Amino acid sequence: MEEERRRPGWRSTVTVGGKTYTGEGRGDIDKAEFAAVRAALRDLGLPHAPGILSNDKAVDELQRYCRERKLDQPSFGSPERCQYTPPRGGGGGRRRIQPAQQRMCIAEVSVGLDRFVGQPAFGMKSARAEAAKEALKYLESPVPASTDGVIKALEHLCVSRSLKLKFESYFGNAVPERDYISLLDDVRKKFQTREPDHELALAPKYQPLECKLGSTPLWAMRCTVMRKTLKSRAFSKLQTAKNDAARKAYLTITEALHGNVPSRELCLDLAATQSSVDEIDTECKTMLAQVCHNLLEPAVQSDVHAAILMTTDHQSAKATVITVASGTGICKPSADKSVVFDCHAEMLVRKGLIEFLFKQMETAGTPSSIFTRAAGKYSLKDAVRFHLFVNKIPCGDACIPVGARNEGELRYRKTDGEGHVRKGDLSKDKMSCSAKIALWNVVGVQGAHLSQFLTRPVYLSTILVKGLKKDAEEAQLERAFYDQLQDMDLRHLSGGYRRNKPVIKGVVGEPDHESSKEAFCWVNGKEEMINTSDGTRMKGTLDISKQGIHTTYHAYPSCRADQGEYHEVCQEWLKAMDGCTSDKCSAENLEKMNLDD
Image (cartoon, rainbow, N blue to C red; front, side):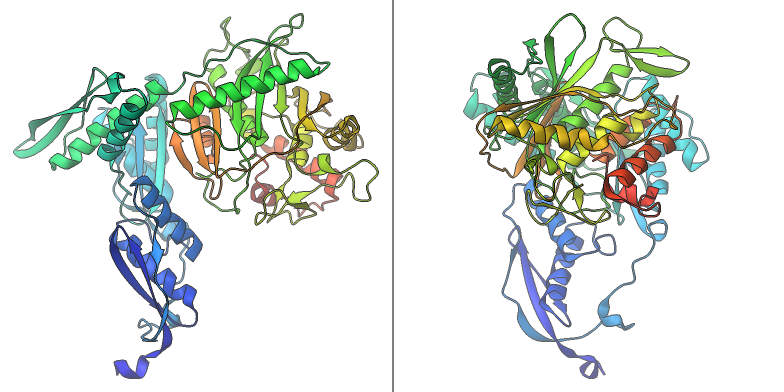
């Protein structure tokens, strides 16, 4: 009977960490490779089908696992012909993908340095609630009965105790585990090589502790590093307790090492003289070098960088760099909100600015804050101004010469080619940097989430661009960032939305720049290193992905209003710029376009 079901197919193998996994598929080689990768993911306890919907996504997950554990990247063997037996039930082995609410999920939540894993549940929201229950029990706080109530109770508790809160959700019934013992040892070895006398170069000291829960024997672990002693929670296995103690030590160390990025006051010359722009450029390079030093990485490979500076006095030209970034590249659109799709430097510093504004809201009303608070909302002080610096002409319309046949068009970037711009598809391609900067001059730089807390949008006062080939290119910047907005009518909208006209200046400079596989961002004393090929976070304590900003947003449960007006302004801008119809500018399509990314 089995012989009758056999069909011609392919067999493929993948080797991970010295172990080889085999998969078979009917039709083409990709199905066999997908089956082999799924077998590896299943054996390693990682999320696999139906949570991973494509071969590319499965391979990305496997590669991420190898990077985190310092293993050689997965290697595929040569495919070969075979007699393939389809699984019973037909369909060639292809499983029907269930809606997210019907799929088994599991979640973990980090509260301060502690981490809690919940029971598997159907749906992401239910899984997060299960993790929140575990955290509330440990923190000896009442556990509400409803799913929403549990999550909100944990959010309020973290705000009241000034604890950092972060959820991570996965498809399947197991949470991917990281080997923090090895990670901690890697950090120590790097410091031994770079700074032998540093106290971190000393090996961490572990001390096991026996404890009991009723009659059940449990283990905890103390870890001493950098003269600090950290204790794990109690677990049934000693190795699990040791890994938890190492995790706390690793997070404590990275928090202590990061943030040492001094930013000095600069003289911001709105006339954009060569000397003042060169001074800003040099300051960016110095700060990025310190970011790489903190992340124990070599120097920044990409020389495309951007920064946002802040002035707090109308009468003074003194400016401070509040966020800086370097990077190029863009990855394919995905529903995964934990990745950063657009890794161009000017887009990263805008996300850094959003993090900075959220942080400033915590001290609103004090002399050191840039915000005042009234009627339950936040207002930016009148004297505060923000200024964007980029050392390369942003891609898109700003690169098109004045008088060219296709000047002034809303342009997009293909996700399968670095830096290529063209007329595109709203739902598939990313808008160019020029288009997004033009959008900021209408809706502001604060984004949809932050707009719910503010009395009016936050606009850029100055845009400085270095890297022009000739002075005539400054007219291209004016056209791309502002001139094409003049036909827009926003008088019927409230909320302070307008056509913002910043000071736009360009300086002639070296136009040649190199791309890099890594992007970096710094703000609020925190750094992040991003893999530009897939948008995943590689290192750092900062998280400027959609998920990270969404987590920050949920730490402020009050003052929320509807995002409808912000999206309405985005729709008006798209209609004016691209001639979009109402259905193409729907809220669903706006979400697909990732205007806030």
